[in-house]
Image (cartoon, rainbow, N blue to C red; front, side, top):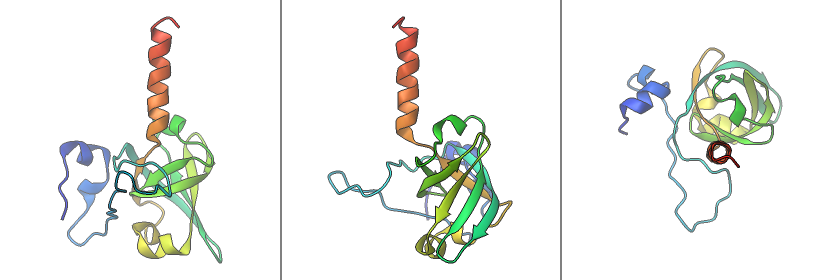
Length: 143
């Protein structure tokens, strides 16, 4: 079980889940431990929708819609978290992005079973959000 707050229900697709629905839960990296991936916090910034899936022999490309207010934080080869899964962006457009999923991700996460039309939770890069805020503060200070 897990607890959720009103903010989580407002920004995520969790409110639509039913008993028995699968979710991805992952333990955080301990402070001082080796960081072998992207910096993610487990927050949800908004939701997208799976638009298409393109399977191949060794991976699958998934195209996901991108809300306009999050688009500026998503860049090609940058990181994004989809349903709690930290992934590398393959292609970034104004209204969508793509990720490539390896067989392990397909087998062990909810992205292996989600289909076009299904909602997904998105977390964008926190460093990009901090940089944006710092730059805006610097411009407001007359620098």
